[in-house]
Length: 394
Image (cartoon, rainbow, N blue to C red; front, side, top):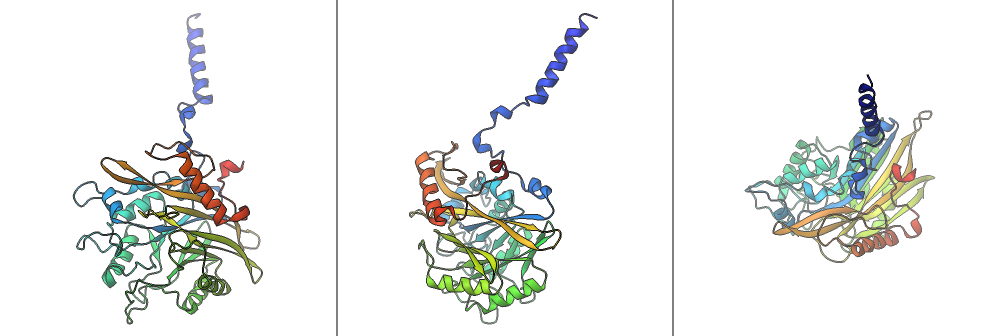
């Protein structure tokens, strides 16, 4: 009996140690993103809250296509988004600008000036947590009518919804996504199609900004179909200009007057400021350009982007949806060499101090430069805050 007591005591000690000091916890590194809730966890928190994450241009230049090649006619681009995935997948709805076409392998894969990417880029985005993409931009007609239609088909078939292009007049209607009891409309339009005209007999193919009349009609239709919040993606402005031009501001005013709540801008490939506006007594938010999410561009500022977070809440008493918080997370594209070729990683910068990530050439000075560039330019004076996830707020 005396021998049994020490054995039982030892077993109890081991059990208590496992309970209070679980294995592996002390080994969690800063880059594990353990404090970022998953999309499933986020959804489970409340049925009357919703978070939207929006980001800028998803581009596929030729070196990126080569980076994802894993054999003859096979590609995998998931590594591009490994670091940023937790910050995208945590949102209830994630949307980005899909700036390429998917014409298929019957045409050569190519980057600028006419983009034709492998279908597997959609799988990588889906794996990252992307739910919706805007397909209305200046490269939407790069591979002609057939390419635009196939892009719409492939993206939807692989599990991501599209907005901004349609294969037929019958299918052209506002995209309304319902999550957690809240209906959000996502509309998308482009200012130009790089001189490749949309056929006159197919005006439904690509949504154009024009004078804004069509946008106003679509907003009205979306609200008629039950949309409680309207997000409009606008592909506009001048490339590489860090501030919006008068045309952008004029269009934004029209779109807000028509009833949009949030405008997500893209096309300049560099960041432009964000603003909070009061239109007809209601708060509205705009980011004139979200910069590049991923690309091979190398000029100053073109490797920088942001993820914009829009947090909504429905009042159970009034049934009204309110925009509770608007924030952003700086990101940048890190390029490095591995396995004999250039690789890419979208790096989130949730704080000013650099985190040690295992990529060649990733320096604290580059991290600091991105942070300073973004925070000082996008929202001077911190009028709109840098995103703080729930764990950081506590």
